[in-house]
Image (cartoon, rainbow, N blue to C red; front, side):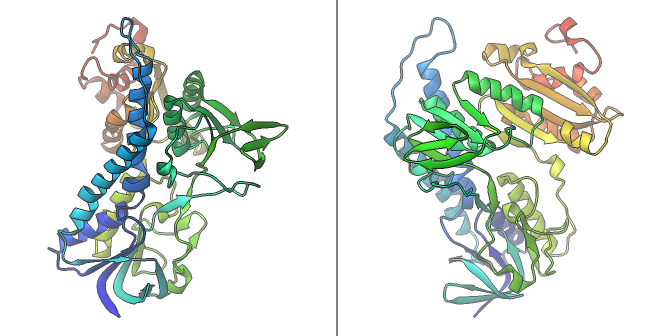
Length: 456
């Protein structure tokens, strides 16, 4: 039996963040076991953020090479998709090596165990033939794709294995309408697939306000993506999906119907840990119902599942294990869908504020008012700023090119309790798409149609 000061179950973003933070705080004097299965680095680097954004950026490059945006430019493009996917997986391998495999070697106090952990009691887990005890545990096992119960759904891709595909599907069905579904639909549409999105709900991207998502849906439909929302699938048979009285033939199908906590095999009951179908239940300090065990990241019962949030929670929970009482305000955490235009949000949405009966003011501008968006020939989006009754910013949502790069401005506004006057009084670079937030701020005090480009 091996004894440790801390055992971390998982080896992704939350796990690494916690292990590094505790090692830094204790000058590598704390003995840590990190337990996990599959490639080191977890979801984000292996099958999530890194490969998906590589796929998206390459698809944009291919689309623009086929169809240049500007008059007078002629181009043509072809693709060796098998070779491209080799490059994608090679890039993932390189990033995993640089950001995880090499990093772990800097910490002699961390022992890495490859295998599934299963609790035997409140302070012991079994891993393969090893038994590990620890004074404290951190559970950071992440999430996995939810597979719906649909008759005939047997041969499919998910965001975990789509990276094995080697041929562009002529006709692609995607089940789901969340972030993963929208991003993959966008990328494969750029590569030339006829993409059909199916969803039981009438909504897409339910975490955003409807004015944002309705606008995005129109943009994607103009791009050739076909939405089938508010429908139930009867069955799938011989590469045909049947719904209602209709059917769609397809070459490949991707299941992207959301993610669920990866906690099934842990035997949490033996450790006295409370959980539900949304994840492990924790208090605001990430402590579970067992006072010696904490949990962080996608395995926790919380509304957002993000790599950056998991990393933050891993670091904070690590400090709390050693006596701090730090929390994470989820309303200060930005999130983005990397289609083009990007969809980005931080803070409260209108829907949330209405449900809580909180009074608010809102200003929304079309991107046609933003010169850089016009230059980019991508001006169908929206910038929306929400304030409370005193003018303090409490929400920002943007549907715009490069929104992922500047939604951090919304974070600073909300985190520091700044007002729309603070937006107005801060000079922005012209021309940028980020200027859309300033113009939205200016619309609190004036008619922007009567405003010149650089009006302060």
